[in-house]
Length: 239
Ligand SMILES: Nc1nc2c(ncn2[C@@H]2O[C@H](COP(=O)(O)OP(=O)(O)OP(=O)(O)O)[C@@H](O)[C@H]2O)c(=O)[nH]1
Ligand SMILES: [Mg+2]
Image (cartoon, rainbow, N blue to C red; front, side, top):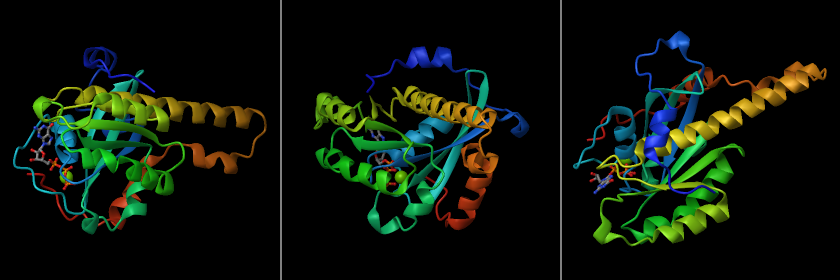
């Protein structure tokens, strides 16, 4: 759907606001990060939210989330990004994990063909558990390991086009394309959410049923509070 993103362009278009007061936040967007174990999900998240990277990252157990606040088109948006284990035995909370998610980052490792071969299964899981309008970006991580590449970029581009996914290759280690990938995803979510709000307003002005339209209003904060209590927050340290 889209080609590799230009990080500089996104930096220019998205002013970062790190210490915004809670009452100034216009939207909270829940995003889930999924993919096989050891592809670098936790480190991508760590790079985006704290600008940190850990070589000795431990496998995630359970579920945790981190946040970063940015602005898109003058709206203050808090990205609440959920990270879970790629290992099946730790993934007991599938439905709760996806509930309320507006975006998904589906990660494979460009040096591990198997992690790319499993991507189709992850898409199926998303289609089964997440909202239909969820925005998905496919990420080929560890792009710094050029000599070990096992997944040609073209294969991933073709898959992403077939499935209607955005796509980028990143390196959590160097930081390349990490911000731009998240910004692209969040910007697309914003477009979807704005369109829903517009449709909702049109419905109201046409005498639509306000109660029926209530579900379109974005109130992710209360939704995510609910989920936190439903989930076991077993691990808080990625390193
Ligand atoms: N060279 C390189 N190594 C990376 C990169 N991202 C992650 N790693 C390494 O890959 C290993 C796994 O990273 P994690 O972020 O823990 O992987 P994960 O997908 O969260 O794994 P689970 O929690 O088990 O699902 C760690 O040793 C990281 O240091 C990257 O962009 N480049
Ligand atoms: Mg992890």
